[in-house]
Length: 176
Image 1 (tube, rainbow, N blue to C red):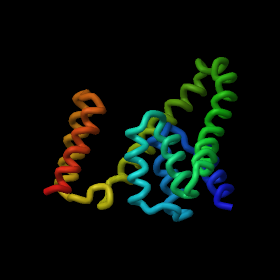
Image 2 (tube, rainbow, N blue to C red):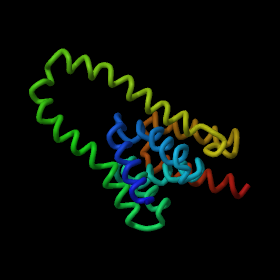
Image 3 (spheres, one colour):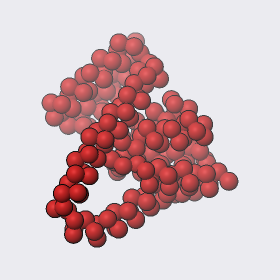
């Protein structure tokens, strides 16, 4: 039964998760943490961190890890990954055929002009969802690490350096 629930949940996420992986995080959190209670918020935030560090799209990585955590085996990973990937693939294959014909249409341009800010809003919602005591357990130290990582990213420091430095700071905060 858990496999069918996982399949259905990630099919919904795949169909309605517009704007890419980061925009989908609040939808994934609502489905996995709030509705089903399969994971705690802390576990979900840990999965997001690991999903960001591993190669590949964050939504697919997240689905793979959640599927494994929920079922305890590879089949859960495969089902969740397949379910989150199937709707966008199907939609894109269908849309691409028609987009070529209507891409210069004023209606298409109007629709995309409205979808862009919604996508940014969904990414912002995902960022705000992650700003809580579980994500920032060390108070001002966690906030300082966040600001430093944000500044480094803004200044175009390579992501591997940012992640490595943040991990080192996290280890240091646990030592001291």
